[in-house]
Amino acid sequence: MRAIAVLMVLAVHASPSALPNGFVGVDVFFVISGYLITSILCQELAQDRFSVRDFYVRRINRIFPALLLVLGTCLAIAPWLLYPSERGMLSKSAFFSTVFAANVHFYLESGYWDVASKLKPLLHLWSLGVEEQFYLVWPLLLWGACRARKPLWTVCAGVLVLSFITNLELTASNQPAGFYLPFGRFWELAAGGLLACIAHDRHGPPPALQQRLGGALAWLGIGLLVASQCLPLPPDRFPGWWVLPVVLGTTLLIMAGPQAWLNRVVLAHPVMVYVGKLSYPLYLWHWPLLVAARLLGDGYWSSSHRNLMVVLALVLAALTHHGVERPLARRVAQRGRLALVLAALMAGLCLAAWWMPGSAEDRSLPSAGGPLHEYSKPQITSTGGVHLLGDSNAGHFFHGLSLLYGDRLVLTAAPGWPYLDGVQHSPTYVPLRNHQGSPQLTQEALQRIEAEPQLRAVILSTAYRMYLPLDNLRSIGGPVGETTAQAYENGLRRTAQRLVAQGKKVVIVKSVPIYPTLATVIACSDTFRPAWRRAPDDCTRPRHLVDAERQEYDALVQRAVQGLPGVLVHDTLADLCDERLCYVHRNGIQMYVDSGHFTTAGSQIMGASLARTVEQVLRD
Image 1: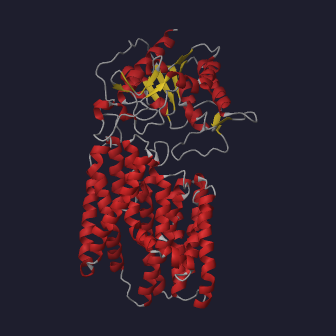
Image 2 (image 1 turned 90 degrees about the horizontal axis):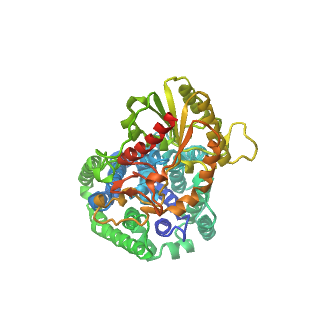
């Protein structure tokens, strides 16, 4: 069964379109793990042989060797493959993986600033975090129940029910928490544990009955697993109820017993047994290799590169199993000393990951858009305050403008919130965890601006693609059937009118072009590319395509400001594009730090251009 699980995961990661739901192989792993480990615990508790020390020594000797090899290899080759920002993220995820908290790390990392999951080399270790967190408490729970003379199956059932309810609640309210955090995942391991306890206490069907039912149970179990691959699983509602058939199907396959035809002939076939033995190292190796193939192709891969990495994963898994795992497993007499050595090595790797060179961002690198000492700046002759208001597309102008306006400049910005008067999120939209904007936040900001008599100009800057394509805004008290584009336009006009009525000048900044297909925009700078990486194909975008995709937005802005005195529109395309192309790296300067935000140098150049418009509106 471990072969089925790992092959499902390998298939979905290597060819997502071929088996899009193969990720449920991880859930199959959870059930199998819970059954196997709990079976051992039940035997030891029944024979009064259980030892907390021995349990964790076995876990260390089983889990650490292959994990150390894979993590060490990833960190060692990082300088040749990864940019500094990517190395920073790798080292952070490696650090959390060494303390078996990768799932918590990736949960906290999910959201607005998240990197595409297909480019995170250690993302797959979230499941190992869940598993080891489970085994921190599971043997102690069973040991406590045994000491209290409570049936072990009642503990399993209790954990299963409580965790399953938590899974439903978390998935409904915060899907990433339901997916990554252990509280809603423990029930899957507890399901295997419950089956192990029942089998140990002989509460299951008699052997003769099980033999007659085994075939039906096995086919029903495999049928549920096949069904899970045929039905669409909504990613925003998984795990929730959708994982239940997978857990039930795996449980039925185990219940069927080794004498069921499917288990005896198919799952016990020597090839399947051998793949099962390789399952753990294969799971560890396959994802970093597939990510490496994508990184070498700047986010894309050819089928030949993908197939090569799959073969390499199988080869490395076999070498790890025969060259590392099996030789160490034979050192039974030295397992305590071996565990100490492995734990020390893991601690060393943990420290190495913590101190690994590489920054979380590439903003400060001179070759990647660091500060400019010489660039064209306007002459600032105006007086009074300037307020920069909007989402993160307001924030990335702040550095450049602050160099020109100093403490006259005030910033109010929040990720994913446009600060438009009378606008709220649509009722069906669930904002990302770090998107905390609200109409109250807008009113507080506008009231502060209105109450400041020395403040003369307000700059409104938002990323329109955060709103129009997502259909996530509505006017407060707006008409039925209103679209996000209409709410955005009406809110933009109301905001400008309100500010003009208070004697403020207004500059509306049109959104910058974005580059969502780039794996990392820093790759567009020739001077800081790792040895194994190539220049991406998408460092420029045809101007006519950019203009075409912005047609609705451009018309919307034009209508919103029509007839309003004291309002100017600043078009960012004039500085980021020419007649043919729009650029990430222009005139030897890295303008973007990610797909839609400026580097330090980009902020200086674009801030200077924006300041010219501000000075113009203040003169008019």
